[in-house]
Image (cartoon, rainbow, N blue to C red):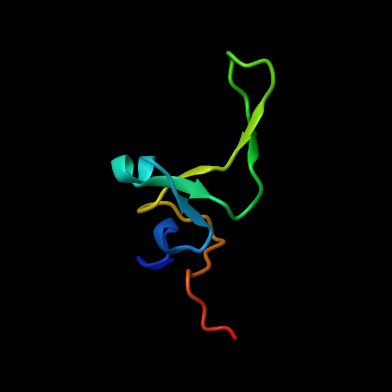
Length: 68
């Protein structure tokens, strides 16, 4: 992993409101995962939350590709 290969520069990263506050966002590489909340009767699905500057999942793909 190089310094450029973080969530921030990955094509699967989606910035959220948290991005402005703490470099947060969502990884949209795979489908949303179930999240269980004690106050809710049923689980809900959401995209995994990641840190844009520090996280790296191993599935990195650059935003722009040279493939034709």
